[in-house]
Picture 1 (cartoon, helix red, strand yellow):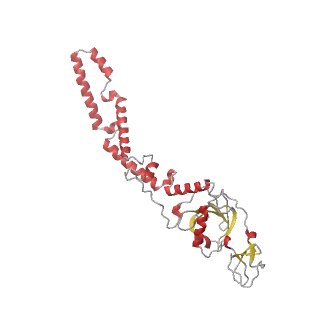
Picture 2 (tube, one colour):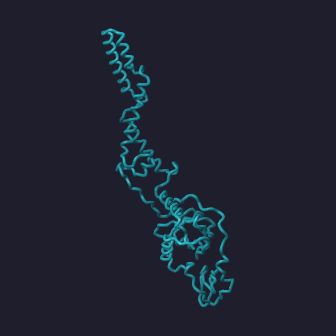
Picture 3 (cartoon, helix red, strand yellow):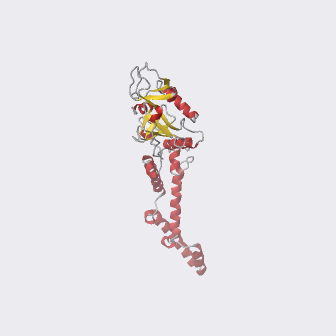
Length: 314
């Protein structure tokens, strides 16, 4: 067997929570003067046996009605592959995902939300409003410069050419007309900006602020619609992937192993932390780091704690 320090700690926790549990490394010698419960495991002449029903006092180990060699109960290897997606921690009863309270720029929006929106968590989102304002200003300038005649404007080169062709009085008239045209053009834009596909700065900032707030709420309310997931699931997935990729992160057993109260389970270094369960004929995902050992049952699509996990095999 291949052992890993973190798994040894998990095993220690399991022993603490299941003090009387008869695990495979704690088998006792068979004693016919003792009564046994179903799925008890004993050793006789170097062979491990498992009880197939309640065993009365006085029954010999050779009785196939009550005892069967443990190795004879090994199932066949699973035919399916481990799941490729992590379960949602929200499926776990009474589970509350840790909140991400980091807000580096203190603008009231968590850093991970700003990162999802493409904003800099170290810079206040006032920069987003200013950016929207700058876009509006550039569009307004381009609108005027792209169609000068609409706004009673001419280029300086055109103006200089006209001045050269006219006498002093004509030049004065042109200057007055140009000034008047500029003012009229400005007033026309300022008095009715909507006619030029423009909005005021205050309207622009208000619209951007409202849009940002609605966008944030839209993503937070349904992150899966944007191919996103909560940071807690992301970190959990990274931890699982890191454990699988670590050359030292291996299960404490390789292949089939028997768990009294549950039955036969199977895993390998390549499959761990996914474990195939013959009780449900489906996969389990072992969750490390919790207060109690917890498994996600893909058959029932829910999390179960250690006590429920053992009892469900009976």
